[in-house]
Length: 104
Image (cartoon, rainbow, N blue to C red; front, side, top):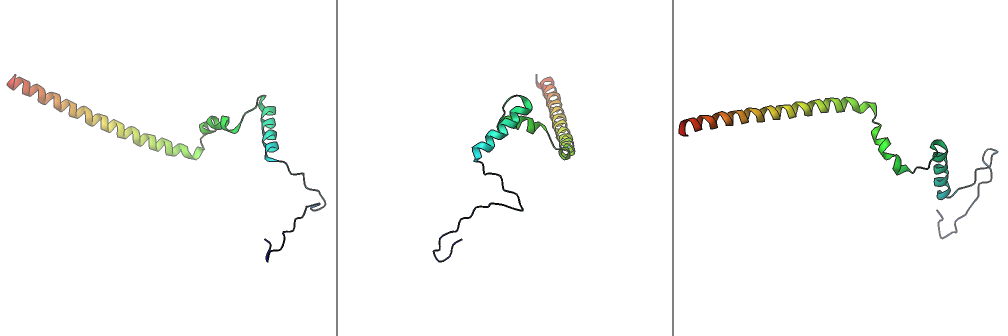
């Protein structure tokens, strides 16, 4: 950063370790090059957002135990809630039948 209002000095890298650096490419050239590589691999051009569903389907193996244990806990919770609801419904029907028999 220039100090005391001195002009900035611009330099151009001519050579590093005996090799010239590659010419700078604009960002649009880099995107076109990526699309060209994708096209050469699969025969058609794909953009990054079109690959997202495939990437979402590939789950890291470390998450499988979490999903299995979490799924087991959720299954046990749903079965417990269902069993409690069935028992409450059974008691309701027994009490309703007894009341109908007494007063009906």
